[in-house]
Length: 162
Ligand code: CO
Image (cartoon, rainbow, N blue to C red; front, top):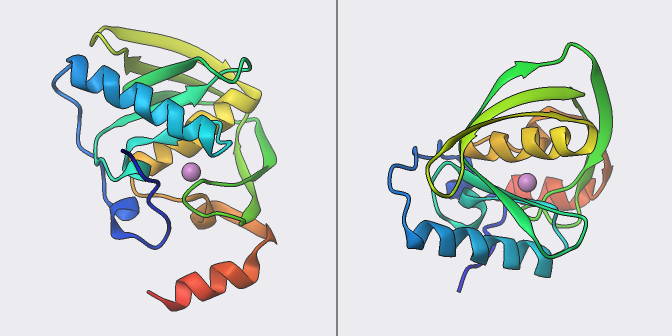
């Protein structure tokens, strides 16, 4: 049973390793990640957030059920045009803040069968993808935040534990 790793657990700061084996276990992990993501009302989840230090993430869909898995994702283009949005994170419950990110990105990644794919993504999904890929590199939204909008006291208390 997977459990969400919350800040300041060290796993969240590690650089995740490339996925090399595309097997049933990987598919089961993606399915389990999507399940816990939806249970916790998330819209995206990266493997380090369930204490698996591998380069994979899932992003939810509008139906609240299906998901898309991105394995070994890499952003190959960041638009100069930026947008600022309020972000939260399942690993930082009750903390929200404003983060500036590119409005459009191009990503290459492997699907659950190991096949390379390319995609152009914009707006909300581009923001989620940038946030989740940050997790694979040990980066959290609080590292990029311009202003904490909710939970500054909680964040201060967590940081004091470091
Ligand atoms: Co997050």
